[in-house]
Amino acid sequence: MEIIEANVDYKLIGQRIKEARKEAGWSQEMLAEKIDVATAYISRVERGGTSINLRRLAQISLALATPMEKLVTGINVESRIYLHKEFQDLLMQCSPEKQQLIYNIAKIVAGIKFV
Image 1 (cartoon, rainbow, N blue to C red):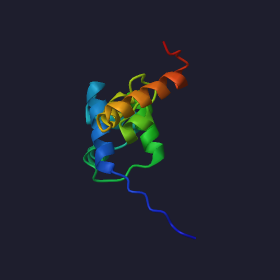
Image 2: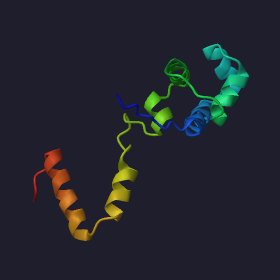
Image 3: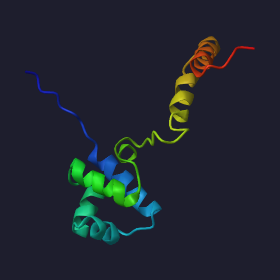
Image 4: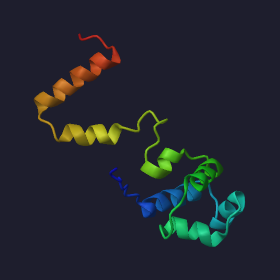
């Protein structure tokens, strides 16, 4: 059986946690108290100095009212604009003809009639 290794960027996850914490107006101490851990642990997580398990990530997600997927991937799939940058980057790599084709396909998928 082949073992698949996943590369998890704990530093990036930590940065996202820190951003969400600051957006909430919380200190590390406040977050630590809310999820019943030491402030030093929050500091290590935010610096990417330690891995974080799913249970703790879920606690932080709930405490900060930030979806877990946003903490892990940086994308909030509940947002209506979460793919705008990805589409923009993709389209910039395409010729005008391919952009028109992608646009037409998107209209079909969205159920918009051609005029």
